[in-house]
Amino acid sequence: MKVLNIHEREFGCPVVQVGALLDSLATQEDLLWPHETWPRMKFEQALSVGARGGHGPIRYEIEDYQPGRFIRFRFTGPRGFLGHHGYEIEESESGAILRQVLEMNTSGSALLTWPLIYRPMHDALIEDSLTKAEFVLGLEPEYRSWSLWVKCLRFLLAGRRMNDQKRLLA
Image (cartoon, rainbow, N blue to C red; front, side, top):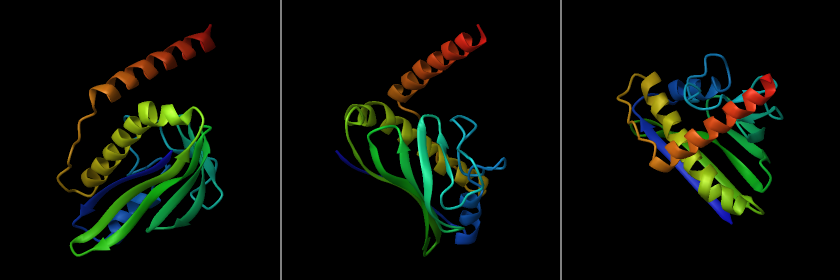
């Protein structure tokens, strides 16, 4: 299945300010990724082409990176995610547009897991990321509520993580 998933928001501030958020990804002072409520984005090294990492069960490698302008990650997991995702910043009349683009083909079990599990979680996470960007930039944040399905998935996955942690401690 071909997937093209795009989220964007326009900010009334200079590209350089929005670019600083992008460049903070996966650092201790991450100003873009909503690590307060989602698994942290982590890499084995600083943001650079070839760095491997991910968040939660999603694994990727930095395929292209132009500081302050864009970053693109190539999926390495889960199985069946064949493509890339990333953030890009575009200049606009009123400032800057921050856009997150996911483009991939799914195969195997991902034909089911993408639309049923990963897409709703991805959509909620990215909207949270854009809201965090608005907040950090001192703008009026546009909060988007999680759907009931996302809340259920988060509850189920949190319960599974708790059981996995209990088994590790036993």
